[in-house]
Length: 229
Image (cartoon, rainbow, N blue to C red; front, top):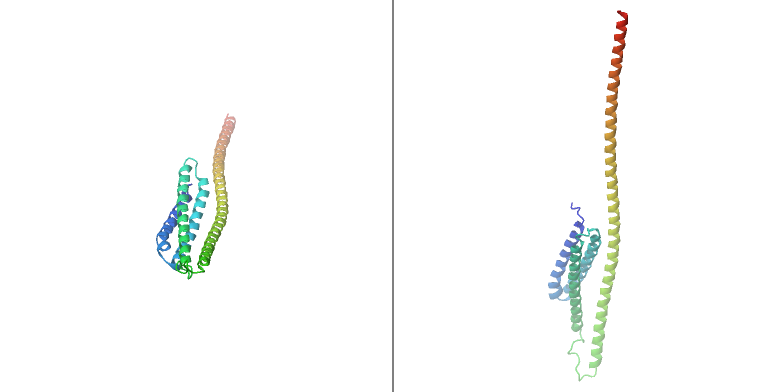
């Protein structure tokens, strides 16, 4: 397992690129060329993946805080490039949503250009109705986009809280591991000191025993000398 300070950032960036590639494929495919419900479904999937890509960038911004200052500028540049890609596809998705809304408006019965002419008495009313319907559709689209952005922001905040909590737990685990390593080092040192003390004790015992033996021999020699004179 890669434990380098940039590992998580690189992982999130790779996930972001995969999501962006999926968005690109959908925008160039069904979201652009399909019709009806198929096109709507493709655009909904694009919106969800845009939210996921936004979340990946948020996680990258959190992870960059733990990257060393010496290499951080290059990663900040990569985040800026990712944000630019995301904004470009958000704009393209918004444009396709607007095109779909206009297509639905024009496809409605009575809202096409052939329903009333300048010679019909209700032509102006038909135009106003068409404009009101178009405004309503655009407002609905804007409201849906605002709801999606609100949900994305809430999700981003929740994700940031979770990541901060995980970062704190990781730091606690790291501190505990460092403490255990220091404790192991202290135990090793204490064990070495005890071994030295035991070895010296045995050496002192040997020296003491030798001195006792020498004294006994001297006493015996003295006694033998006195008895045999």
